Amino acid sequence: MARNGFADGLRRLLGINQQRDDGFFDDLADVLIEGDIGPKTAFGITETLEKSGAKSSDAELRARLRETLDSYLPRYALQPEPGKVSVYLVLGVNGVGKTTSVAKMAAHYMRSCPVILAAADTFRAAAIEQLSFHAAKVGARIVAHKHGADPGAVVFDAAEAARASAGALVIADTAGRLHNRENLVRELQKIDRIAASKADPGQYRKILVIDATTGQNGLRQAEVFHEAVGVDAIVLSKYDSTARGGIAITAGKELGIPVAFVGTGEGYADFAPFDPGAYLDEFLGD
Ligand SMILES: Nc1nc2c(ncn2[C@@H]2O[C@H](COP(=O)(O)OP(=O)(O)OP(=O)(O)O)[C@@H](O)[C@H]2O)c(=O)[nH]1
Ligand SMILES: [Mg+2]
Image 1 (spheres, rainbow, N blue to C red):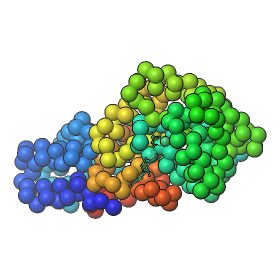
Image 2 (image 1 turned 90 degrees about the horizontal axis):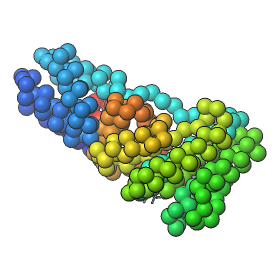
Image 3 (image 1 turned 90 degrees about the vertical axis):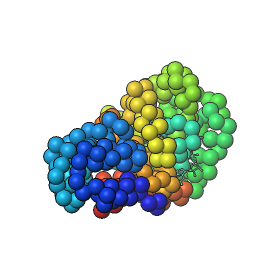
Image 4 (image 1 turned 60 degrees about the horizontal axis):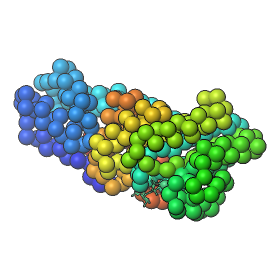
């Protein structure tokens, strides 16, 4: 995994500035922002630290920083209930890793429950074939319609199939489009209504894939999708390709959205539930 920019920056800053003068906390905010923490959250963090630990030792400051960041990370387990119809709708802009994440989630959940993939990206020409390829590889069932078909109807049929097999987790791939916001919102809301009506109560989740290499753009995407349909959890993809991961903290603090999974490569096994402790170890270089 790539070295963490924030951890290196923090180490450097602690080495240079032992005084904790005004400049120290400004510099710390800059280093946090370089680590992909949003400016608002970064200044909130430095304000908290300045109030509580301005004159503290390196170790104390690190501990306080860790405590503060930890308090911003919502705890969340994404687990379907056995015997129920659960629907996980996977959302995100172009190319962030939605289809790959759907396949990884299938491989993950198939160990504990039946999974049916819904090929609800009917927009991009090769999307259905791509998902079918993954489904065959991981051994998951798939429900697909023709290219250009109504994505809501695909989700509907997949949920019906889940009902017919006495419960299953439906994981739905969707098309990634953000260039026409109104269209996206309208279409998403339609799929959203169908998914919400077909899943058993409390078993419907909207999961946004964010490419960890896109930095602050990821937060903007989360805001747009959250406003459109409400986002329950994030999959942070391509975390293997970046030295920064502050988006997990910013999304938690500013939007209250937890990270559920982290993707660290192209293989199905390069995927794990988000572990806040391990994440903070790496972010802080502890
Ligand atoms: N290194 C790395 N590559 C990833 C990861 N997740 C996905 N990818 C790669 O990112 C590229 C795009 O992945 P897709 O799953 O097709 O993305 P998508 O969001 O479905 O794309 P569209 O359907 O075109 O919007 C592929 O080459 C994937 O192999 C990851 O965690 N790490
Ligand atoms: Mg896709």
